[in-house]
Amino acid sequence: MSPKVLDKVLASLPRQNDPNVLVGFDTSDDAGVYLLSEDCALVQTVDFFTPIVDDPYLFGAIAAANALSDVYAMGGRPITSLTILAWPSTGEFEDLAGILQGGAAKMQEAQCTILGGHSITDDEPKFGYAVTGLIHPAKVKPNANAKPGDVLLLTKPLGTGVISTALKKGLASIAHVNGSIDSMTTLNRWAAEAMAQVEVNSVTDVTGFGLLGHGREMALASHVTLEIDSTLLQFLPGAVEYSKLGAIPSGLKNNREFCGLSVAVDPAVSAEIENLLFDPQTSGGLLISLPEKDAAVLERLHSKAFRIGRVLHQQEKAILVK
Image (cartoon, rainbow, N blue to C red; front, side, top):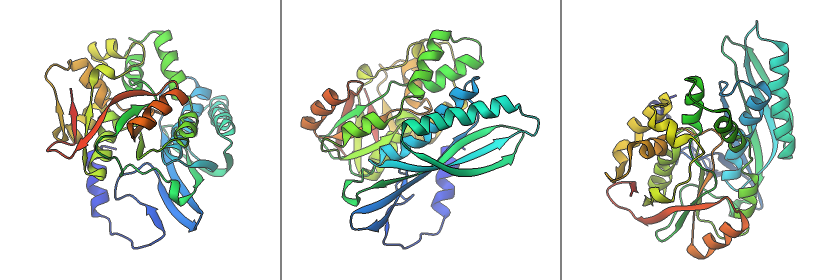
C-alpha cells in the first residue's frame, strides 16, 4: 500500500487510551509493545508480501527474516509466530511446501516457534508471519528517541528493490541476485544482539518505505533532523548500475512522492544514488542512532555496521542528504 494512503488512514483512526501500550502506531514504529509486568513486555508485529524471488524456499526464508526484523528493531527477542498464507487453488503442492519449509528453517534459526497460522485461497500468493517477542520495558528501542549529536549506523547495504526489479526486467546477473538474496535472508538478530551491549537511543529497520522513508519517521518522531552522507552509503553489488539503467520499482516512486517534501538532497548527489535512498527494501538493515562512543564499539561488535551520517537539532527538513 502507498505510504501516503496508509498515513492518511491511520490518522483517521480513533485513539485508544491504554496505559499498558508502551509503543503504538502513533510514531509509525516497527512493532507494538505492550506492558505485561514491571519486567516484561510483549513485542508484536505482522508482515507478509507477494513473491520477490522465483525459488519457493528462498521466498519463505526471506518472508520470515523480514517479519522477524521488526522485533529485532525494537530490541526484542522473538519467541512465537503465526503463519499468514494466501495460495491459489491451482497452486503447486511442491511450491507451497518449499515456501513453508523455507520460512520454518529461518524461524528455527531465530529460535522462534511457529504455533500455527491462517490461510485463504487467493489467485496471487502471499506469505508472511505475525511474530511475538519479549523485552524488558526499560530496554525498548523506539524510533522516537534519536538525539542531536548521535551517530547514524546502518547494518545492511541498500538496493534489494532495484535488484528485484532488474531481475523482472531481465537485466540482473545471477551473482547480483544471489548477493541480494544473501542479504535478505540474513537475520537482524546478530545486529540486535550487538546493539544490546551498548547505549542505543533509537532504532528502526529499513524496509518497504526505504532509507529515507523510515529515516523520516525516526526524525519526525524524535523531533530532530537526520543528516545522511551519501558518500558513506553502501550498496549491494549491481544496485547502482541497475538504478542507472532505470530498474525503478513502483514502491520507490511511491516513497519519493510520500516523503520527498521532507527531504533536502544536495544537487551533487547523482540521480542513481538518490533513487536508492528511496528504494523499498525487503528484510533490510537496522538504522541505529547512538552516541559516538557507543557507535565505535558497535562497529567492532558487528563488522557489517557502517556509518551513514549524524543527528542534528530539528531543522526545516526532516532529512538532509549531502
